[in-house]
Image 1 (spheres, rainbow, N blue to C red):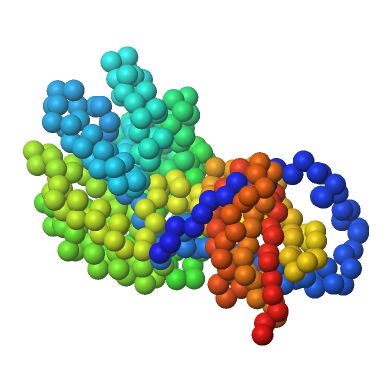
Image 2 (image 1 turned 120 degrees about the vertical axis):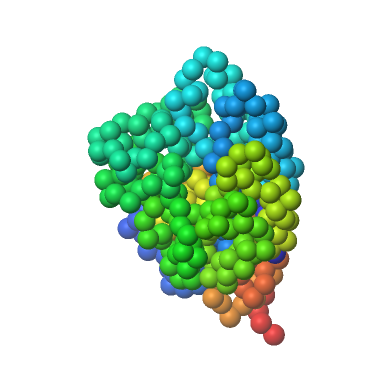
Length: 381
């Protein structure tokens, strides 16, 4: 599956192009043209068949007494970065407030995060939060969230210690603390698939099922041969899966997972038509996709070229400005679209993209709220 091009969104200095009053009505020809163009977000980024998030319940820099532990974490991170994949590590914030651990925050922020290694909140303390009251759970969820914000680690996704979130008050406390989603654990295979088929929203954003992986735990997925059928079914269902790893290659620790099997997992993901995204990225993509709002205004219909101003709703854009959506541009027309071009204010030589069956897909970062679309057309013969 091809990777669709990302293009800069338009900054238009000629604001009169947008100055049409809401009370002005386009002429019938323009109205007819407008109705023929639609924009539909793809279910997953790059129009992939499924999404996968790799989460690792391991804490960066927290085992100074065991150099092998940190070496293996670095080996995992380097493997992910070298392959241009994504992974999330846990962060229980209590340890990083200590002076002797603060040094690790810089490498997490400056070296890992920009290279696709994100961090999911794991509570200020590594506790079972179902054993706490709403108020106690909220205070610790919020403390973790606020500290991660202070450290510029962009708190969004959460993972419950031990996967414990059976109480509604635990999930409510997590949501109220500011997290956009939270991972639990799931051992029933038919419950692993998030947003399967035509379902666009998880059953519960604060109890997302995760596929538990460990070579030495009978109830968990122990190797790639057991994971592959689940991954293939996720592609059939066009679903999102969350993998939960423990102690990769660390055979002296409980619940370890064999390094060779981990490499097979990564090879599998690179061979299949799946999007490997951070948990916060996939959650944000789903929420942006479901809330996507736009308007199209025709600007010019001469010389066989159709030109449109596409404006993304500003409130929507402000909320999801860090998200890049894959959009399908569709024209239901008696004419054939040959190429499409997104015009940038920075250059006059923007690439033209081939159009197949009167549609094409392109990745649009939502940090701008308007762009111009030029479509070259011809009559069907």
